Every structure is written in structure tokens, then in C-alpha cells.
Length: 290
Image: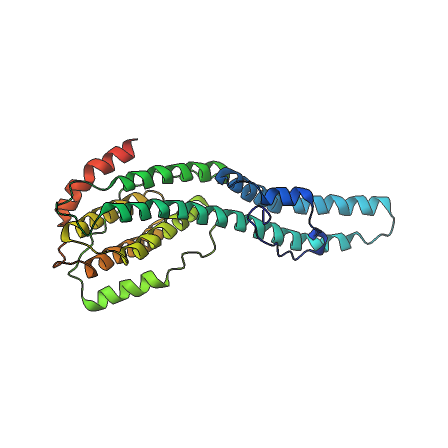
């Protein structure tokens, strides 16, 4: 696992340490493939859970039967170390998949921000940007891969509570939200399940959107387009993650909109909640029906 991602393994079990060999070097040169990374994570977890303990148990039995009076219990010592190394490898594989996938979505968002021309927008938005659909389709692909390899299919969810971005919050509310967004650990360890991995992917992408918004200048209509895109991104993300993670993702999107408002050349004015719903509903319905 570590070799494929270009990292040096930190192994606690001395027996697993070996000098560089040709197969490991070949792994370092492989092109990136998301399903392969997930397969490595799956193998590491299965070996940790089902293979290691049984293998050492069988080895103990063989030693005890082959050599009378042999201390077979000595063979059990490395088992915990091997299991820890396998767990570390599996987490590293899943974490790398999350980072690369999140950076892929961030790349889409960067291109959309740079090409959209929000500083010159002269017409009110009529629908969310195309990039929202691109993000949703990519998320569906990641979700299917994770569900298949981790054995954790997504359950159908309701829409949940919608998050309406507003400029009427008090200074204290805005500051709390800003500090919350800043404290989120985008590259934190990833839980070994589908929703946790998807949350990590969205975290990387939405944090990038927040940073891109800080570098742009907006007209009122450009700000409203950002608001519309952030609203639909947040809604669609809630279909894939748990409620607690959805709240953290919403904070990042809210901070992106707040950053856009602070960089608006005109008096910043956001769309009313009813207008946002009317503009998002057709796209949201078409995405979920796909």
C-alpha cells in the first residue's frame, strides 16, 4: 500500500521489514487508479480482521505438534504488531483515495471559478452552474466504488433541513461560523466506511472552493451565482453523508459565500430562500432521478 502511494512504510513488526525489491519498485511506478487503491484498502482490512490471527493460531498448532515442549506461545507476539501495520496500511490507502478524489473535484471547482467571470457577471443567475452536475456525477461514481468495496451501500435519505445562506447574521454568528470552518481538519484520518470517506472527499473540495472564492472579485449577480451553486452542492452532499458531517460541509460552503460577499464590488445582495428553491428544484430533481 505505502509503496504504491510513494510513502515510506512505518512498520512496527520487524519481520515485515525488507530491503527494496523489484515488485515494490514496480508498484511505485503504477499510474493512479482509484478502484485499485480501494482494493488495497479492502485487502489490508480483510487480512487484519480474518487472516492474521488465524495464521498465527495455525502456526502455533504446527509448532506444538511438531516439537514436543516447544514454546508455541512465542509465535503469538507479532500478531498484534502485524494487525496494527495492516490497519495503518488500509487507512493510508483509503486516505490517499479520499485526498486524490477530493483534489479532482477541487480541480473542477477551480476551473469553474476562474472561467465563470463572476467579476463581470451582468445578469441574474437562472440555474446552478454546470460544475454542480459534474461534481454530483463524480460523487455518484465514488459512492458506488466505496459501497462495493467496503460493503457499505448508501441508504436512501430525505432532503433534510436546507441551509439558507444569509447576510443578516450578527457579527458574532459570522465569526463563530468562520472559526468553525477554519478549525475543520480537511486532511484528518478517514473513517473506514463509505459516508466517512465521501465526507472527506467533499471536505477537500469545499475547502478549496472557499479558498478560491477568497481570491476572486464578485458583482452582485456573480455572488448570487456562487450562492446558488453552494446551496445545491450542500443539498446534494447531504444525500451522501451523515447529518453531522453535512453540518461541517455546510459551514465550509457558507464561508465561501461569506468570502464572496466580502469581495463584492457592489452592495452584496443574496437571493431570497424562495428564489433559491425555485432555481435549484429542477436541477435537484433531475439529478436524483438519474
